Amino acid sequence: MPSSPDVATVVIKTPRGIRFDCSGCGNCCLQWPVPLTPRDVEAIETHQPAGQPSPTRRLAAGRLNMQTFTHSLEKKSDGRCIFLTDENRCQLHARHGAPGKPSMCRLFPYTFSETPVGICASVSFASSAVLFNSGKLLSEQTDFLKEKYDLFQELFPTLQLDWKTAQLLDGTALSLESLQSLHYEYSETITPNADETELPPTDMYAKLRQMSARAANLLPSRSAAERMPPVEARPKIIDQIVLKYLAKLYFPTDVFSNDVFDLDIGGLMKDLVSAPDLVLFDANQIPYRFKDLIQLKLGKLEPALQDLLDRFLYCRVFSWLYFGPGFHHLSLLAGIHHLMHLAVLIRLKIKCFMLDHNSQSIEIADMAEIVRTMERRLTQLQLSSNSIAGLEVLLPSLERADRIGFLAE
Image (cartoon, rainbow, N blue to C red; front, side):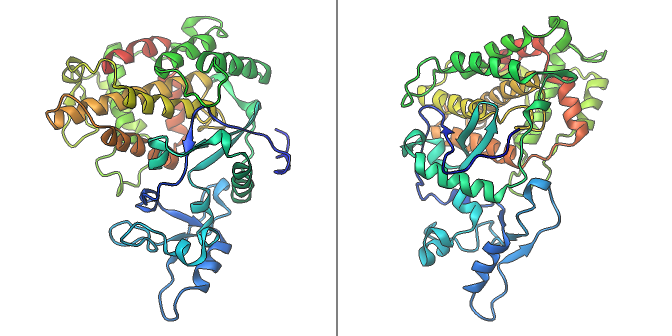
């Protein structure tokens, strides 16, 4: 991919109808590890009272794209940032203004992707303001976004995304020309109206299925995506096993203390081979039979709930953070179907919440926490090569993509 453009001349694409202004909720300062650059450490320790222990901790060598960061900010015993007041305000910001905060805090919740069609901005759904789509439209933040993109490049100088390596299916190359052509088809599918102020149409799940069908048209045959090795488990049981293990990854019992960010691909494969008659969806402290979840019909979500789900999926597609170098080098079909599984997981979690609380509905704030948890886990994923290989076998199935939506109706 060509070198990054000069920030002064860069054009940043923004997702339609997506808003953000900091709401001061403090949620980004809870539990999240905050990586620090040497400059951040110097600024913090310069203002640290004499005799006080350092609030920073040196990091072990990590991923290549995180080498800018050498330390992390310590947390209190309850997981709150050491500089967060009881009123959920940042002491560093109060004392020194926004420039006094660590670089990653100043960047949050913005993120950027260099794609074959330009630089795409997006936002993290770990932010309350993003979850509730409050504030100014991203399309109205042009100059501010350029400043944030400049900071993004400074923090991630080695993050060069080579889209020439993208694949349609594992082992099936996807040319840049075909990728760009599909992108424009997808854009027309998802956002046919060019009005930047309007939100994308509802039911992104159906749009993802259309995207899958368009990609599948490039395959030599439909059966090319059905590469599951022979196992005794019935297809519907395989669907449930895949969802069970994805749920364990994205919704661990204790999301804050769990430090495992990889799929248990070994356990998944053992379950496939053992071909169980019963699979439990144990993303909650109370495991549920899929039969019980299927019998509880959600139907059409309330507009605010559907809007949240659609915006979450739409931003992933818009910013290309769902396949290829944008997401663990999954193939295009595996990436689309992974998003479909995420949508199903969110709806299944809603069902679990309703059963847990003996309720016929769910409040938007409770669904927001479900999406926030998933976003946090997506940010922290460190999938092994074995996990990626397993997902490439399990996710591209067009037949499975046609079936899984039934589980979350």
